[in-house]
Image (cartoon, rainbow, N blue to C red; front, side, top):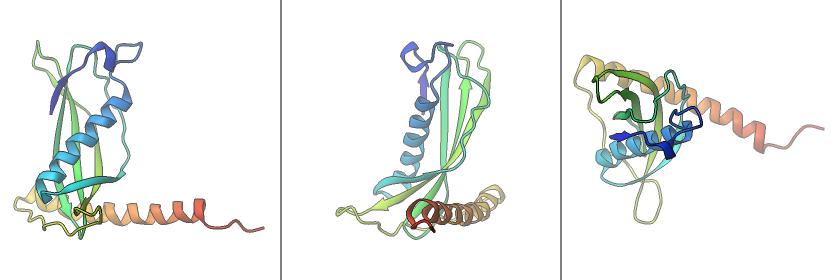
Length: 154
């Protein structure tokens, strides 16, 4: 995906709003997930997101997404964000995130997704790393659930 950063997308410093970047990351990742499973998907989680370089009004924001692993009903998408100066062609990565999506059937219930078959050495590495990230996400989610939803000790 590519968009030009316009003044209504920016903060008073002339940089794209972080929330706008997050919105575009979610859309780019969802498109990759839709295309993989040919189904409706919902966002289940987003890993850490750091903003390394600002993207200024007038520059292009470029997002590249790919599915790194498919599980039973969920998929992990890696989304990389770049700024591009359309006058010079300079491109620089500004952030990245891993987003988990769940596929839904017509009744809105989770449905099985097709497997992802990694082919290249890089794809196989991302595939292995995705399992470790998933384990960490599930562990963190369980801790958060206990912290927020279990009764407190008196």
